[in-house]
Length: 207
Image 1: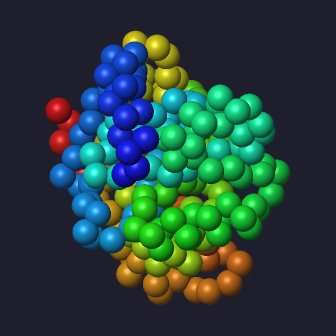
Image 2 (image 1 turned 180 degrees about the vertical axis):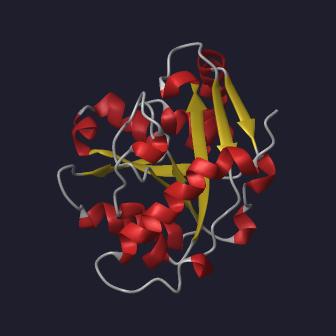
């Protein structure tokens, strides 16, 4: 973790936990840095999800893609970079953002990807469209995936409404190695990841 991230983490940890009423389950499932890089994948409910994940994870600074338009404003750009964000151009596959993701993984960093691609408030995760990006990065990076379920009442986040974060067991590359190669491979891996995200609350003690 960078020094700047540690400072920002200390400053924002308790305000975020208080506003979002975050309760984390399955902490024992989070791998340590010595276990190698990890792709962190969760469902996507709101713009606060990256901060929720920062609060939930103890061993990793989650680097994540953020739409490039937000980096045009210097104060916001500084804030986003402090929390590990890097730009992605919306509207299609951004080769540069995917390459940055792989480079970060090679440096033993934790990269966050939302398989749904966009925020899906008020929707059951299993009923939303899944993008292939998470599967492509996991496959080409040959890294484990940490599935995380962010859950709240009616899947509709609101200030001071309790948020439960369930950290599932890591998914090893061996679990998708036998999938057929080709155009659909990344999509199938993304679907595997999403299925495990949905099941994460069953792998974590509900306390």
